[in-house]
Amino acid sequence: MQHNALMELYVDELKDLYDAESRLVKAIPKMAKAASSEKLRSGFEEHLEQTRGHVDRLKEIFENLGEKPSGKKCAGMMGIVKEGEEIMDEDFEGEVMDAALISAAQRVEHYEIAAYGCVRTWADLLGENEASALLEKTLEEEKETDEKLTQLAEEINVQAKESGSEGEEDEEEEPPRGKARGARA
Image (cartoon, rainbow, N blue to C red; front, side):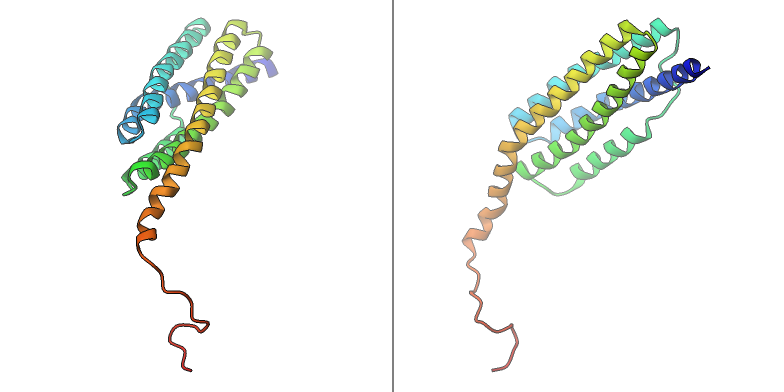
């Protein structure tokens, strides 16, 4: 009985992931277009191809289970994608927008890492060895993408900080006079 319940949960979560990955296939090109860094844009484009592969792997798993991959909406990914769209609607520019895009992309990766880690473990427990290997491969790719985003962030975040302070250097602030503004002597 527990085996059947775990299998039900496993299939349900695979459907959730299938919907999540399908949503990302539509969202990633928008993120790539919003990026000003060539490295970041290229990274998004590479991950788009990888994400298409993730969809294909999930289809293969469903086929082997005799299940259809559809039928569930991934509320978690819908929310994360919506937040990413809101970030792109902000009037951030250049490196600051890139830093925001990296933040949004890493939220996606962390969500996927958690989900793929769970379904891979369940596949192991259920004796779904072929599915486990496919899920492990995807999990490793998601971790690699997260690491690449971290490396890009180390460079882009510094650039974003510098671009945000360029205008401040031109304007000299009045030094404090020891009294609060408007105070009478």
